[in-house]
Length: 110
Ligand SMILES: [Zn+2]
Image (cartoon, rainbow, N blue to C red; front, top):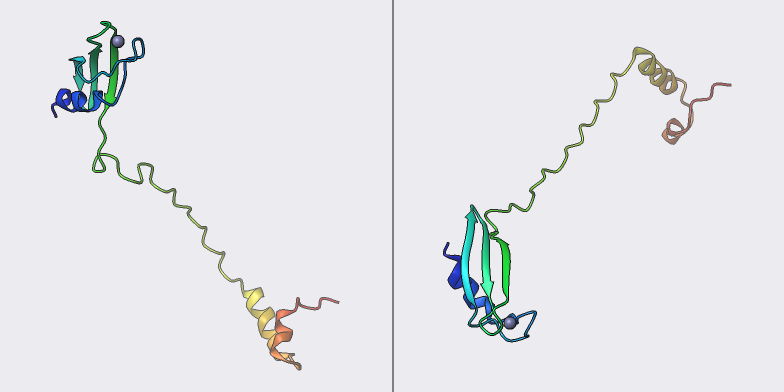
């Protein structure tokens, strides 16, 4: 991408930090470009103040919404049912005299 015309277009919206004049007609010089990183020298035409601006171009395509993948929490598998537990349920069902909701109560160990 040719950054200078883009910069020139945007420069009009900014004013020189020293003389407060618009940077619309500032001088622009591309000092360095590395990938999407640009270093541009901006020179105020009024007071000759020189600014060096570092830019990084980003587009939606370049920056996926999830740059960091959501960490997947691995749930440990529940331990296999032991024979004892099955027997306990079996005995509670066998001895059940009341409503099924009685099964929801903790077993009576007394
Ligand atoms: Zn100036």
